[in-house]
Amino acid sequence: MTFNKIKYAIAIVVIMQAGTSCKKDFLEVAPRGTALEGNFYKTDGEVYQGLIATYDVMQWGNSGGYTMKMPLLSAASDDCYAGGSSPSDQPNWVAFDNFKMDSRVGPQVGLWSKNFTGVYRANILLAKMELNTSLTPAFKTRVAAEAKFLRAYFYFDLVRFFGRVPLITKMLETSELYTQKQVDPALVYTQIEKDLREAFSALPASVAATEKGRISQGAAKALLGKVLLYSNENAKMTEAASLLKDVNSNYGYQLLPNFGDIFDPKNKFSAESILEIPHSNNAAWGDWGFINGGEGNVAPQFIGADSYSGPLYSNGWGFCPVTESLVDFMKNDPRFAFTIIDGKDLKSQGATYTARYQNTDYFIKKYAPLAAVRATSGTAELNWPINEIEIRLADTYLMEAEALVRAGGDQGRAQTLLDLVRARVGLTSVPATIDNIYNERRLELATEGHRFFDLVRTKKAAAALTGFAVGKSEHLPIPQDEIDLTKGGITQNPGYN
Image 1 (cartoon, rainbow, N blue to C red):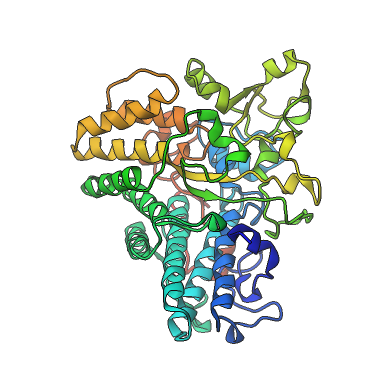
Image 2: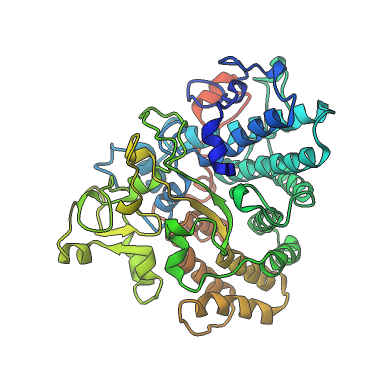
């Protein structure tokens, strides 16, 4: 049984379900079922279930509303618009797209809930293992490393989305539940780096075929390199470049010869994939409520053309139409055909679809709803078996090249890395300047969820994004419920009301 399939066979322990409702505080610890905390985590098998429950949060896209990271961040960037049937279809998406969020409107509830649930589960796992002397030593070491990676992963999203957040690295006592304070983002980054450094030294260099989806040493180093890069401190660029060079050179990752093959659902966990979140339709999930019970990916349903009829694709909901800006930027690039669906071409071949709000007749292709993999059981719209590739080799090549240029490091290697990414799609060399590297990131990684944070960290967001306000729009508002539940102990981000 593979790592991913185990998730369908177990009942997630109820003490790890806190934070899934927008009406509850993210620190809630009340048990909701039969497997109580005090009687659990006694054996390797029980601890493994706790680990799987922590990994499970990475898949979530239905916390406090639809908050699938890839399309949501594309809508916030200049790659896509929000779309949908009207501005009132998903107002939280439209507010993020236009940067007209407030404490109650925007995607913040789902993103806060998801990531603090992940932190909470990782903290429980680490605390319980620390007290358990009966676990197999090698098993305990690996699981602790994975839990630290996962806590770092969730906090990396939290600090990028919210800036100042509570930093919680232990199980909290009841008296501490509503007294948590936000900390400076630098302290969050310090904890993320600490967790990742401790994690990668204890992780395997590779994972078995039956364990695809578990974290490897290469993935942990890649995430740490990315964290150092995104911290935006030039003093950290040399270490970032070194870590990324190790990832790019020593773990067997390879660029796929055909760019389009990266996103083919038949190529899950390909040689180019470094950090990938698995999805499956095996769970046959059918609940339309905002409950994260299935293993499917709802993002393909969101971004498909509405009421589509024709070959290759299935009908979608018409969100995230690709902007004219991205179309113009990519129109002469070989990656266009694998990144963007041209609706006019589809219509010329006899297909039909309904134009929705902000329609441009261009749609995301990289994880579009392919008819061939549409679920045949459960609610098909919720069960797309299309994985999310969070980090892949072309990304780490470009991150290493950027770090080298910013650190004044080996410019020849930076040039080689940029050339490799371009040569894969038949493009000639361009100088490895920082602007050319940033342009290449947009071309190579378009609609994969990187663009918004790239614009923010490079201070280019205000020029590229309509409505973006410097000093405010870099972060989401804090959910109003968290401010209310803590009686103002948690405070709102600047510029929001």
